[in-house]
Image (cartoon, rainbow, N blue to C red; front, top):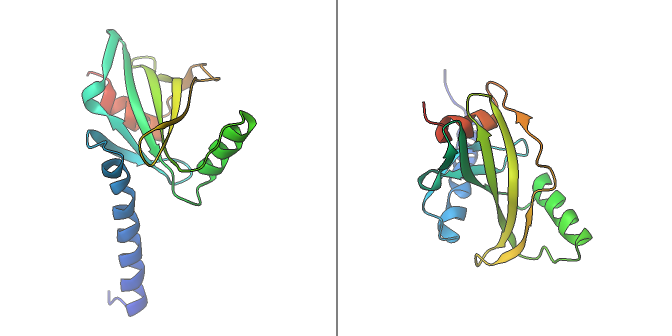
Length: 152
């Protein structure tokens, strides 16, 4: 198959978009983060593998980091939530979430959410309003986190 100049441009653009997501962690001083995939809004998702904690044999707790793009729907949702709390979303760079995973039960819940600016300062931190267990479906992004966090 012969590629046209337009095909090369498209391939270059796609590759550059992947490289652009990576420096967010480095800029935030978060070299310990491991990329696991993209959210439904196509924002980069990372986990902190070295910080995984096991409060019981079947429970894993792991921090995840979402690095939303500038035009992300997730970023807009976070800005809206912060506005309701009368907090400024100016400079929002990334969000860290404390995940609790029931490994054999294939369930996850989100215990704490922390929003940071580009300098790494906390904009807002709170216990998650939604602490209900959610099913981890096969092939989902949450399964990537489960696979990385749970002991086999």
